[in-house]
Image (cartoon, rainbow, N blue to C red; front, side, top):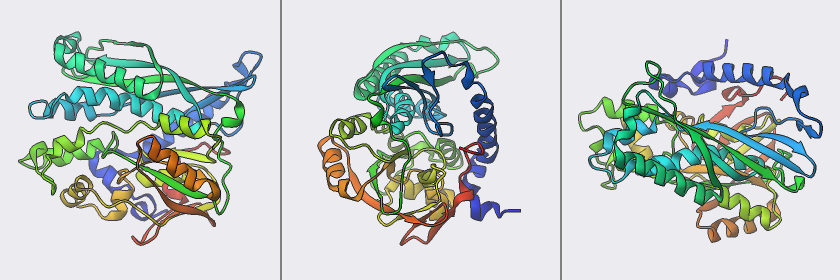
Length: 374
């Protein structure tokens, strides 16, 4: 039997009440069953190989791939409810966050978003009676669509009494995108010597929030606790997610197609080995640990190894590119307003991640989200 803590680094998830072993097992079941339905595709459409297990689904049609993503925000809106008295327009940030959860997955396959839809399920229709909150959510979602270069195409607002708590909203949505021409697909053809470029996050984004809520509940100062830079815990958590669609668009328009791209969300930096390839991802440069993440580590009793397996730790998105393209990738990122750096390199070896200088190592068993054969 494997050593749970050493191989999975999930002790922080377990403490937050999130069991990724169970969730990932269900995801693999779904992906396996879903793959048996591809024969139902209409004539002229085809499923490309090795797409199951990626962050977005692709269907080949002519000289393009059509892309689709369905994603949810998680529990960050509960933080917004808790901090509304001292954080300005928290649901505006939540609207952007919801789009970010969707679009940042879509672009990892090289798809540029075309249309985005919102799904806002409530326990009671009375949730929408707070006109200012509802307007902030709508304004933030629309702003997220604009930042993504996509139209807000529609949505659904079901009232699910006895399924959702009457005072809560479950936020999610979907997006359609396109890869055209097909040569712009980010397909995962990586090799030893390729470089890893990371782009900075704005903070927590929307991952690890259950753990954050647990920390707030266990301390008397809650979300009003002060970080080392003087910011409150609640203010730091409500910084909107960075949207990386423009970065990918700019790369593709300049003729640079990354070999692979990763949205660093659930599973933290273990997500860097999402691709099932027999290589080692060696990280040589990490951003300074921000006051927010230091606060979470200190109050939550997390080691660095557990923190990097849980949060984005300042690195929100990664692309794997040819070593000759690194300088151009960094310039393109900077011109788009993103902070980026050359973080590491891909090496020959077993599937694993080594974060040099921090004595952090995750072997391949620490991330198991693909069905067998994918």
